[in-house]
Image (cartoon, rainbow over all chains, first blue to last red; front, top):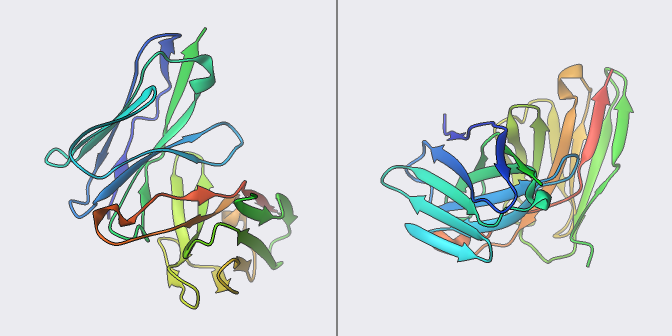
Length: 111
Length: 117
């Protein structure tokens, strides 16, 4: 059974701090990894994708991938109350037809 | 630009009733997907369509059928609803290329909240 594991949280950080979200995956064949943000009662929204080992930065977000350790993380710098949401980690193979999602980590940013 | 449109947004069914969830995308994406989301279990793939004319089972296909009507539309049918099918259903679409970066991530619809009593 291919799995993506996340700590369910909640992770609570003060406004302006760095939020660190982590994820591990079991399928060594996974080649593409994603972070989605999901506000309560809304649909998931793609915020980051990463395909190669190392870091990828986009604004306040940095995704990190370590294929040897089967580990993916998302750093959110200068966290804002508007970042409070559930963050879903996902991994898939080429074509992405069977992307596997983690259950999500709930983030709460305190003003 | 509407993205992915799902209908209906809410539905209550009695056990044994049937219904079809509709999904349409206007992004010219090749691939479309149906997921269900249950508390603590994340998103689970029901069926997907890699391209127009093809459909395949995902992780939890039992009790569901799908139709890829054309490139834009992908419907999900519950033939005889059961309380275990109470969930939030999301349709998604994606474009794809070749190689490791061929999976560009999904665009999701707003979801259908289904309750089976």
